[in-house]
Length: 487
Image (cartoon, rainbow, N blue to C red; front, side):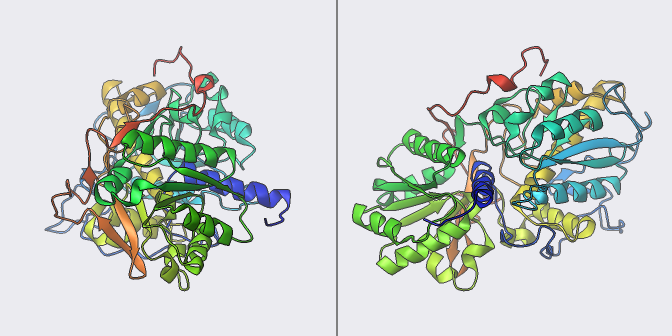
């Protein structure tokens, strides 16, 4: 095993928590600077807040297939904010990240980048009915979540679009000061099942997306006979591995997964792992970890002359690292699930195109990543819910009112930015797609657009089993539930 100091051990373990528990797409290499150059946005005819209307351009600003919830004041005037809930000249929304943690500088900074880009996009249209948005940087610095929670209590109307690795540490203070949250992601069982919050793409510990395993069951029948799950031996990543195993059991048809832990800070030699897969006759491999280790394991498998029939990973492995020069030949055949349209198809998805244009216009030096898309989805859901609250509450914006409106939303795609989810019911998407390394680059594998398996907009959906209940002890959420709150 690799000898590392404690700081590096914590850093790598933390990165594993984020990229596996969140299940996000990351299209920027992990070793790039936090504010590296963004990717170029594809051209699009979608109306934008940055474009002046022409004779054939609709005056309504769109985000994908949804009208923008942002805009100037209505006849009722600029809204007021309920007393004691951060009233003032701006609507202060706090975005949680851990970007100030010294051992992993820039951790989840893409969420803050996207929040600031969204604020610029929204304010260019007039804000929330004339109320400008101001983003508050809630930097938990990994181990300072209680202090960041105090900042949120004192300075923000709501927490929107971010996430902390140790998000269970915000409780019970979160409830004591009456905060509400529209998180971009949740890591712990406490945060994913807490009240006082609505998540646009829910991630509850006991209800998991199953479309990728259903695809494997239907189209890779022989490959699922002897699966293995290779995972970083860290408490959170082990929990993710156990949830994956439970999902396979719930879907049915999979052999009993072989559970293979590895050092979360990395292995000096991956050949023994590759040899074990060969000796055991493993036919399907899933890795819980980061793309760098997947590349090393792939190369070791090529060296021993044995690659399982199916290598199927969660969406954090949708990374440029896997198809970089020197890696793509080794990783050929890798399959990855996602609930987002691949970045390679930005010209076919107006919402994705608008997201990329938003970033290029208002945060040109920001990171482009799936976590940023999750942030924008949360921001759109919040503003839409704030508008509904203003309609129902005499033009006064109040926390529980906005949250109650969000809980009424049972179908959400953020204008087509991602597969349909159920925020109000705290249910993850029942749809998804499979992308893979094909001829050295990322390409859609399933469903083929326009095929019988395409239920619309490039997704394959299974209403009955696409989100499946799993059994197991995945944490105690009771500390994060306040029964006295209305929502």
